[in-house]
Amino acid sequence: MLRIVTFVLLVLLTSSWPVFAADDFAGRVKNVQGSVSVKRQGMMLPAERGMKIHVNDVISTGKDGAVGIILQDNTIFSLGPESELELKEFVFAPDTGRFSMLAKMIKGTFVYMSGLIGKLSPGSTTIETPVGTIAIRGTRFAAKIVEN
Image (tube, rainbow, N blue to C red):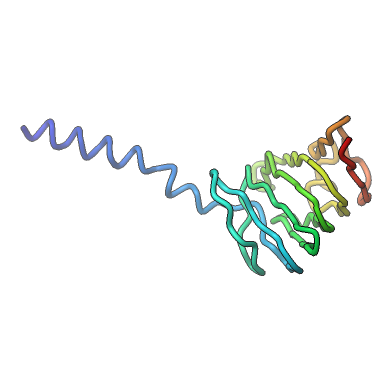
């Protein structure tokens, strides 16, 4: 009986491990104007100043919306009205030399300014768009994605 209880406790503790890791975040919302939401694990959350942004979050702005996001390496994304961005991957571990940032611009207008990942590992930053991929080598760009 003791073995069964120990086994069940061990399974419960190890299955909740991802919940503890969920506090790792990629960045924060710096400013919000108008209607802005964050889709996280199937839930729509209203964006607010200081909100943590995690990998796989999809940030969307409404007709009157705009948002500024600063990632942990000081990368900046600014989204205009009717825009949508998914942060697909973000690794910033300078102590181990691991860097990676992959974002997908789904629609709308964007301004991007690279942070430390772009300076320390220029080939580790990629932006996907509906029609192609941008490998970032510079420090900033603006883009507008229009729907067909």
